[in-house]
Amino acid sequence: MLKAKIIGPFSQLLTMDTIPLKGSVNDSQLEIIPNGGVVVSEGVIVKTGNFDQLCSEFHDLEIDRIEKNMVAMPGMIDPHTHICWAGSRAKDYSLRLAGKSYLEIAQSGGGIGDTVAKTRTASANNLEAFLTERATAHLLNGITTIEVKSGYCLNTEGEIKMLEVIRNVNQKLPVDLISTCLAAHIKPTNFEDSSTDYLKIVVNELLHEVMKESLSKRVDIYIDKGAFTVDEARVYLRYAKNLGFDLAIHGEQFTSGGVSLACELGAFSVDHLEMVQDHEINMLAASTVIPVALPGASLGLGCQFAPARKLLDASCSLAIGSDWNPGSAPMGDLLMQAAILGIFEKMTMAESLSAITFRAAAALGLTDRGILKIGLLADMIGFPTSDYREILYHQGTLKPSMVWKRGDIVKG
Ligand SMILES: [Zn+2]
Image 1 (cartoon, rainbow, N blue to C red):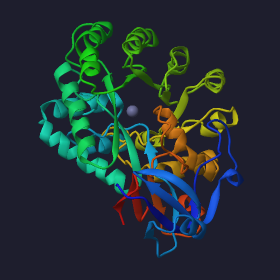
Image 2: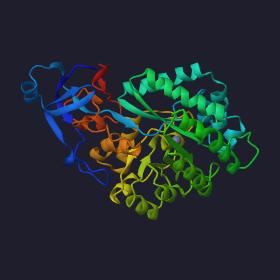
Image 3: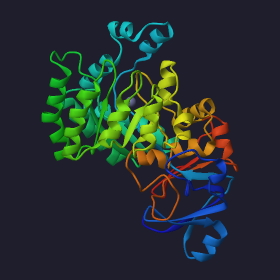
Image 4: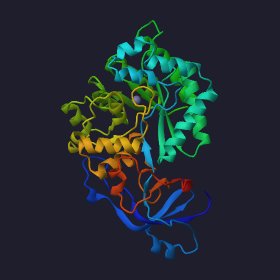
């Protein structure tokens, strides 16, 4: 976008400005500009305010005129997905509904091993097509920045293939894909040596290459029973940090341990937290680590949610990610999941909307988006309503009818 323009008028412009990064938030803290407008130049917000005042102040600018009732807010940010995969785990899901255990499903040829086998054999072109379809669906649902993890090949060649696919799709689509190297998802089933040996190979063969080729700036590891221990993760993440990677951790989904390491190493986020303990919540509150709840995984597995209310009341930040993946979180609807977590955990609308905008940006270390204010990216979404409360009230079924990425209309 080259020319400056004014976008509006919006029935309400929900800026998400002036809300703190951490702690509980009341809806009265939301900045709502009635009859609002946004001035955009070169994809960046120049000014927000009353639409008529903006029109007289910037009278020579072109106007993207909104003719109907519309509430605009920052584009949503999904800080945790696994949407680069091949295959389907519908059969696993049917077995889970029939009461089969994780182990029984894996033994019948399902589980993550099935996704790894199919993603390894998929061509880069096919994988690009799958990722393009999912990232486009997310963008049209209002998610203008999507984190995407590797971690379904679990060998050097395949993990590089995944990260290259994410880079290529990022270059082709208007949505921003933020890639994360999750080669430390689990130890591959056909790998005979120890987990430590596997991580050594990842460090020696993969991480240097990822850094050299600028395939990702982020490294993630899954700490849990059946994945990696805290001690294994500490050695691995320290190495990654020394190489210059930003850190994220999958932690506290079924067993405790990830939070203390995230705080110790200064990770950007620790994600899952279904099993987080009180003393760990206090640790998070005193740290810069952003807790990320993944209600999509709770819904996909039929498990408890992360204790969002408790985290917020303890002055933690809280972001929400979809965890969109073929196994535990096939739904992939961030807004619906935020709405569902909100009603179960009694999160205010301000807290839920913060969790999928600027607090999610912070989980990715991004300071240039997630709020509609001067100098930030003009990533915006517009809902066909005149009252922002309708957005979460419809529990995710009211979708944005307009989406702007860097000021350009990509939907509507
Ligand atoms: Zn995940």
